[in-house]
Length: 626
Image 1 (cartoon, rainbow, N blue to C red):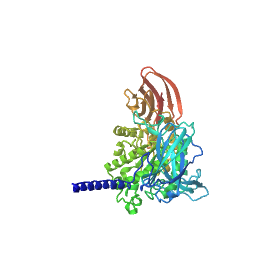
Image 2 (image 1 turned 60 degrees about the horizontal axis):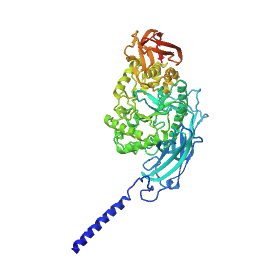
Image 3 (image 1 turned 90 degrees about the vertical axis):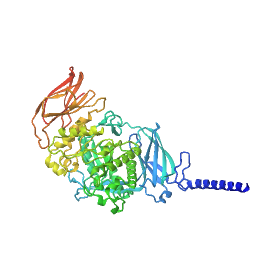
Image 4 (image 1 turned 180 degrees about the horizontal axis):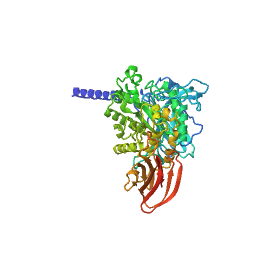
């Protein structure tokens, strides 16, 4: 019995020692403390002090305007030798609590300030950067110089929507372990600005865009993808955006191209050499805000992952030949390490730019199906993963999209790809009002999302070639009206901004449709395409009609089917148009389609549930009945 008792005691002691050893081994595992625990580093020591202080940069903090906070690091941080662009190594999150209790979380980003100054004494003529550089003596010319200001540091950008005291809790992570917490407050003063909010999808019919306040947003504009002057750089945008705004355009498309704004082209994990490019992007976004231009921000373009179409794969830092780890472009969509690194890039962009209400959407890829070894399944899966990640981390919930080289794309079916973004250059010798709306309607029926043709044209080869075919911009005007009135969420967007629109001063082609679109309210309980309304009749087979009946409002656009850029002169057309409409009093307004001016306004009475319009027009004719 004594031997048995001793053996039993030994077994118990041995088991307890194993349990204790197991408990001690857990202390070496990285853990994220709960709210009530003291933050510790991975070795179980007391918390670190990496951030010493936080200050508000703004001289005045106002509701609905960007707020910037600067974070001051300590010597302990300097000794860590971490990559400040790698959120797995160092991540600082600001949890902002508004006066009404709304909490938003935004990451900090590593920032270097630059002064951008145009040296007008610089006399060398510019060359074109992937485009045509303007050399006009009537525009500012010179060399844009980026000068360093101060030291690099962490910064946080916010968009407060409430006035009053905001409380901020800062969570500092090192190697994914919470090591420090801080707190601060800032006071937001009231702003009398007519704040509309960010652009969202209209929810009743999923065909249009609205601001957060419910007001309709109809994009009117063109691609403005990068600056093309090798010398004045962002001054290009100063000129383009000003001319667009003067002519009622409100929309552009900006690429993070390797030759302009890309943060990751030199090194996919360290953006230090590209901080001056990002300073230029900062200024471009500020110019967009000043001119009330909204835009899609295109994160990647196809050429970066292609050896055949606008090829840049041989220069791409992801390429194993350049020190990367991908043997083929297609591995970018399947490699887990690449996915995590790209998410890190996305988080940096969200941290730096999500404050901007002028970013209508993040566009993950331009014409993704031009990438090498293209796989429908892999690319769709990648888009779903990245769109979901953006939605999880963007505190202001910007829209997300992508684009393909033609109409269809499997990624458009992903839940968080919120509108389709097709491209088409096959409109040579076509009337766009006849040709574009059927394409839009097929895509809407397939995806049940807003459709915006973000690249359209009559010649994919060059702006110069486009100018030869259409020197006065008839196809530019038609693309705008066909998009706005033909079932799209907005105007179809020309590509040749630098080599067709600007040198030929075709901005006026936006003016009429832009003025008209400002008066459109696309929200309501009913939505009907005007040309498909049962009982609508038009007595001339050479005349087409586009537009909408939204509740009791009618937006109409009548056009000559023969009119196109290759047949600029057409005969006058006599029309009798009959549209079913409930009885009552309405205002009828007739618009000049070139200027947007109302050329006639009258009250009409409908007493037989039908409105009849008799008129003669040339080329096109726009009206509203409200």
